[in-house]
Image 1: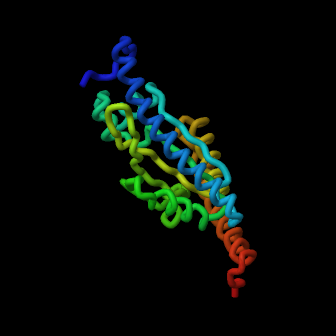
Image 2: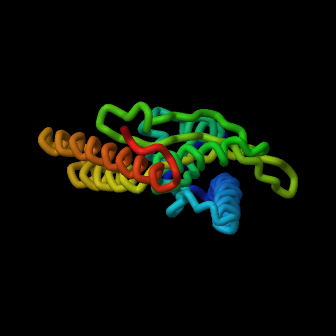
Image 3: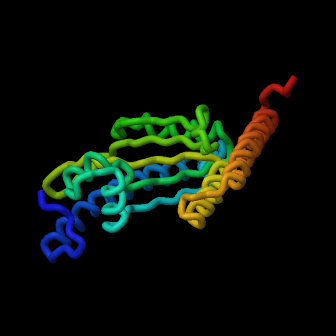
Length: 214
């Protein structure tokens, strides 16, 4: 397959556009699933575990940059095989238990195929990053084909999301060369965020009929 050129001609642009459009359709399908869960749980009156949702679809330029960074050939077939976060959804919940509940509700649906699940809540990254990550496949029914489209899910609490947002801004400001004292502060802040999540989770259990802490 022809490599992605910096200035694609009209035919190549159409090919890339069709490639990304399929991922957009997969993203739309996943967002529909999430919205159905939100409305159903709100209607039941049992409490909606989802605080807010955001999504993103990589641009041609960001695809090219990532492919070059990981050594992936600039061909659509190779990109589809090696880059699994072309389309992504971030779901933010109030409590850790809610994050796990939402992950379970989405990954156990019969038309969702789970590729990988990484639990960075139970096992945070060395820098303190915490989140639930999953790569799932969603069927997209086109006029002449059915495509299994990979979607990256990131599910985290408000505290985890705030920490990750600040960390991203710091790394962007320093072009990834962050001073050691700031790295130490980030790690300390990650522990504070984790403590907050655990305390709020305990309050949530008490309010909803769980046992009081001993």
